[in-house]
Length: 436
Image 1: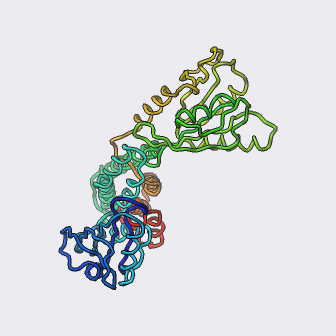
Image 2: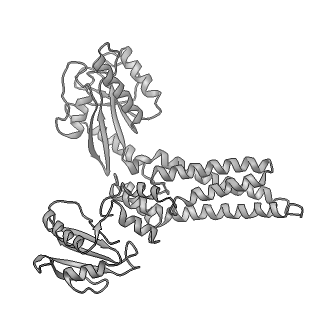
Image 3: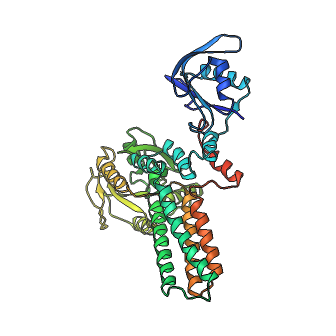
């Protein structure tokens, strides 16, 4: 079936790109704009069925299999605007195409062998990249680094499996005395590589998904003032009355090359007010889900039991914490031993911005990373299978050992190779952009 979709965002712009893919793509395009030569940019008048000119556009034909989807593809680069694009798409639909599902172009590329599963996921990730570091990581995945990593692991496990099958088939014959030790060393090497990539991918997921920063503290320490200062506009209501903020407030902000989500929270304290307690519970949830915590204290007063409770709560989370001693324009009275940034949020927060940027930049990496939770789970399942196989090898239960190694090979292969279950593929690609 021929599919068509707008590959650029809807709205007013210089150019809109309409993508058409399928076995009849060329014949449909011929009805709209005339004959096309493969891989040549043609300036064409696009006409409707009555011969009326809809637009003058650049049209490019990519002959199968030398296209993104592996099928015949025609791209119409029209003048930007919703009306013009929709008129052209309507004409294409009238000639027998249908509107593409989200991600269907990428899905066809996958099924036609033009890209692997890791590259397909990195395409969508690159579109939604939250930092320059994320873009570089995903570009390396698209270039095939992750695929090469997975192929190397699979080859090692296949060799191990071959050794084992030899042991099973020729159990009564003399085999090299160190063959089992070689297998154990190979399994240890593969398990270690999996453990490393899982660890670095989990610890630096914020590079791909975007970092979440929660501002935490007691009431009236200046959390909302810090949010407003970071945003450079009055987003949150500021008042000397404790408990003014009752709900979490979320905004996106650019810190250096990173796009982060910053969350202002209700002050955490003991309260007998039901509504305020709901806000406090939301604050604790935000802290638990955040990658970075900005923990704010009021430097103009002596610490109290609520400050100590906040400190105990923050220390229990095992998160990156940046401590801030706010209200530095007033006399300093704070007596807890905390290495924090001294600032007055009502004036400016450049020191806090610098500390955030320095930490975010330190998270950039040149190492291979897994770009989705699906990939992380596949590697974790593979590692678990290898660990079980190692135990079975020690017990000389070779048939079950071979089963676990086969399972590990399958899990690693699933990172780059398409799964046979079409429902799983449909669900994965449904999160893609419509024109991808």
